[in-house]
Length: 217
Length: 308
Ligand SMILES: Nc1ncnc2c1ncn2[C@@H]1O[C@H](COP(=O)(O)OP(=O)(O)O)[C@@H](O)[C@H]1O
Ligand SMILES: [Mg+2]
Image (cartoon, rainbow over the protein chains, first blue to last red):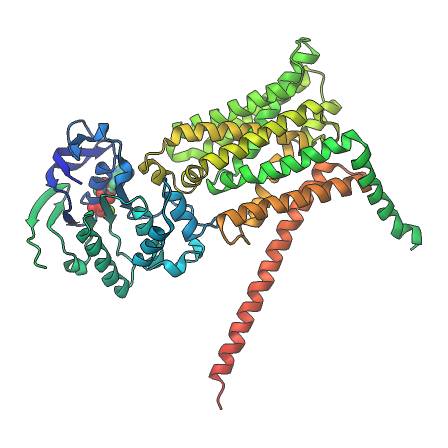
């Protein structure tokens, strides 16, 4: 999936949070977005997802102006916080994943996805009994249910133990190798384990560093 | 204790069964009870997930305003509108939409919508009850339910509603669940959450208006919320929880109807008290269970640390 951002500025109420952001992401790329807390990383991806309403002709997804874009199902998103999710009511991992897949899913494809993410044995567990790392993986699985062409992950490794973090990087590197574009927000030192193709640094709402990485693998 | 004392409830219970077999009003009561016992917790589950438990109470008070205005139209203005229930249903739906509008207006204080609508409903009710002849037995029935006097027409309405609700849930199951659990994710999947909200709100209003017939304005919310509150503490999955909530609810309806017939007490209150008893039982059993488990854990840990 191709993303083009052209001189985007965005603010909540009166405060400008993003200032003159421009970059492009080609199909199959792996972008790492770093920067201090409050620099505007989450705000930027929410603009890409259509959660934040942006001005016209600033964002293009697969060359379609974002307000005209309809194929949202092609973008998977793992939010920074899962506050919006209602946890206390019983629902199993499997039930969440099944309803998140809007079209029919082939049973084999479902099981292999669960296996790949390492939650096969959790599928009948109630969501409110999972640990932080397990929950994280469930939400990654949810984002993958509709076979997205782009996966956006907002600080997915916070509060996850270091074994699971290594496992996580192996997983997204594999996904990327299979052709899924990735946008990963992190200030995790282990981000070096990511086979990224491009790194952007945000400071105070501006992009201050753009690094194109020649992957050597 | 005399031997008759033991047998009397038994005779009365047989009378209850005979009444169900022979009396149309009992058959209608049973039918209404079973259908509402099914619908209320089913809809109530989605209300609980969305943390909108107060909405049931709010809407039932607002529906009462519609019922009182209906009474006023019939008793005082002699308008041929048939049953005040129709105006009640219109009010239930209007109230639901009003709450939605207010929730959007007060984005960060969404719960403010409830007291506003409840006050309007209660004030209008007080006004029109007094204008249409004061506190009559009809008004008493609105407040506390009148399952024994439902009409054949009502049976048709509630049967149709039940079928519509089942079909809608079956067709839109995935989307309803996503929207309830995680609205922002539903938007990301391209689901039109607002249209969804609109229709679920209308259904909610309708079910509440119909449930008033069973247990009355003051007890409607308990019918929707309490079986769910009990079920969510024991359910092993989402579907399992819905099923348990419906079973708890139906058990309360049947036991409540039976006991109220046998002892001669109000059915609405009896049904709700059974619901609450089930909730209490669930809480107590869960507590005992968890105490037992900690004891087991403690003793096994003690064994491990015991010196040889
Ligand atoms: N919904 C919102 N309303 C108002 N201000 C917000 C909102 N979300 C984020 N902000 C503000 O925008 C700035 C950037 O936040 P964010 O994008 O979350 O940064 P980051 O993800 O890089 O930590 C912060 O100052 C934050 O307080
Ligand atoms: Mg952030």
